Image (cartoon, rainbow, N blue to C red; front, side):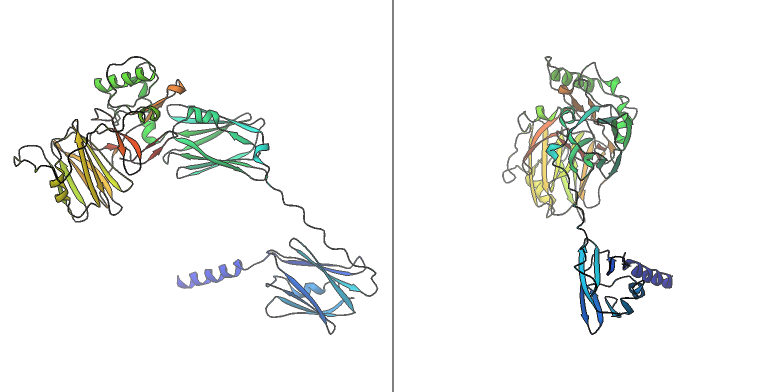
Length: 490
């Protein structure tokens, strides 16, 4: 096997040094012209001395030296190439004056005899390179968009049929058209279909390329309808598998929701009522209570006050946990390469990592005694703070390294583990959208075990999060990026 590898390596070395070089000669115009075609480009110098014409190139040429004398018997008696393959020496059969001209990758060396009057013509200059046109002078390409249960559709309205190609990988998709146009994204931005958003465009001499960011789990399908080119971005499998059940869980409104993540689970009466209340709010109807488990459109959510949780006492003044071990407690245990936190008698939690900070948001759990918990965490966190109020506790644990986070239920308790290798599979939540009325579009999900949505500020990033604590084992395995907001993995 070692010998085979060595032979292959030698072959690759030889083929990689090959050049597309050639030479031809012509004596029809009263002088001899040697025309070299060199690829890649090379530079040449000419010298005549003692009846010998020396041609030197700045790289080795892949040509046969004997080809230089072919058909030039009246001008050249013999040719010799130096060992470096860069220098050729032509013994002249008569007195000549050399003349050289260059055009792109062509080099002409003329051997002008004394009987020729004048100077041979230079090679014609190469044609000018074509350049991409000014984008502002291009015709508009209207782009239409639609949102459906299992896919988002983008339609490119070309005035006449054009050839196209589509390439997609890892959440990035590009479509290239054999035509020039300036895309008009107005309708696409207005509809804002899920699982896709535009990410720029460019043109060259004769083509237009549009770039899109898609959900990493989304496939695509392209087709044509006359001159129209249709690009469908398919829902991720975790969303598409439950989208067909959405209608059954919805009242006749303009808000969409998803059933529980397990395939056969249905919405509870409280969750269905929450959906109806959110729909009434989005449609301008009065409502009597907030929708606990439905995410609102970002423009409405961000208008709310940042933070439903009240700040807790500082860790330095936090009281010592009561000695009564029968009361629900929050405890932490330092492991070999991470920490494990246990929340006794707790049903709902949200756990995720953002900007180097582990978030643990517990709804309905025991009170958190920050001083004791900080001691139990030991040297693991880079920083630690907690706040609580209204039945909710929020823990921020600063991380020193790249860590993972996982939550699972153990009887009436919830355990959260943080470490380099703790991630466990989760049952994906489905985010479903309803676009019957684009201006009232909503993206919603039924979260098993969730009872309310909390709007909390992120002091590290400086924006606002909508967090729904729920039963452990359910979440988003991957980040989902939409035009208006980003759904974080949790």
